[in-house]
Length: 127
Image 1 (cartoon, one colour):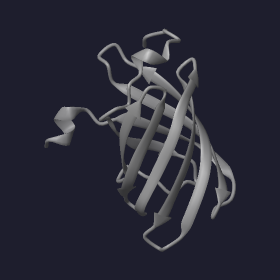
Image 2 (image 1 turned 180 degrees about the horizontal axis):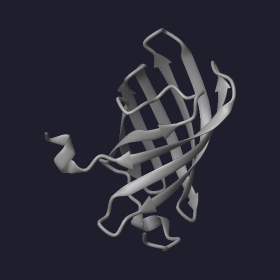
Image 3 (image 1 turned 30 degrees about the vertical axis):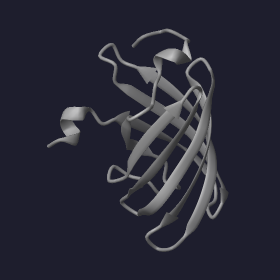
């Protein structure tokens, strides 16, 4: 892993992620895809798949590859949920990004948890 604390080497624009771990209270799983765009230190994502009909994220980088974000979604069972999270990003030597989130529900769900996501590399997207 690259030990740099510089946010500028993390660019989420055009990147796709899937969860690989999630706490019991979370609603996303490995069938959920997150599609990101980024301008400057601000980013957003749309997501769907698995139990999620549609969802959105807005966030901003703060420091040391750390970002604050808000998310909301509607599930396929018509539940409306919202939360906030802190994300830590890592960058592998080959440029693949992963993120670890500490999240908490603020509406529509109870509790908090942790999730890990990995970037879907281009070759996997074109299978």
